[in-house]
Length: 246
Image (cartoon, rainbow, N blue to C red; front, side, top):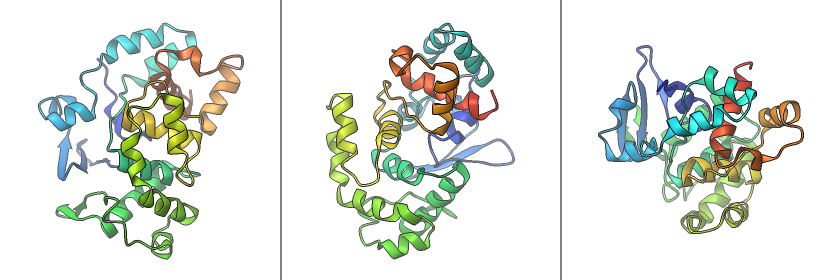
């Protein structure tokens, strides 16, 4: 299977990972610094096995998506296999709050600054992403000084409402979307990203500027139900494809 690990890790699902000059990917997760070159390095670790969703048949999904239409075929063939990461609920929530009106480089920078300021050092120079408890004393002024801008009050509201994140799993998709949107600053796009990349809700279909362009240009008479049962993964392929220049 032609795994595109770089796109999975650095393409906008997660902001925890960095790639070094030797092609190694590393991230502080689960109170540990993980370093991998490929998914074979993750298969024997129970945490990473779950994180990379290694129990799901991505080859079957990839083939089904590629056979749907010519556009999806192009997207799948040009991108290679990508996966939907199963991230910590809190990390995903704050990450996608940070993602609003932002780009991957800047979001990653904000993620790292929050980690250094409020998290704790796990390995030399590498910090955990702070828990809600670690961020409890944060002020809006401090968060803005780190560059979060208009997102600062949203982060503070998420800290106050962190218990919501433990109530999402059993909810139907629409109810889960509505529940997440009771946190200030979380709209449909951010809620959908959180549900996909943390709760493994594969029916999510986030609509950002890239996806609005895709749908308008290539699927003007379709809605996300067209991509069922692979809405989220189809969206990721189309998102990667259009950003790469299609």
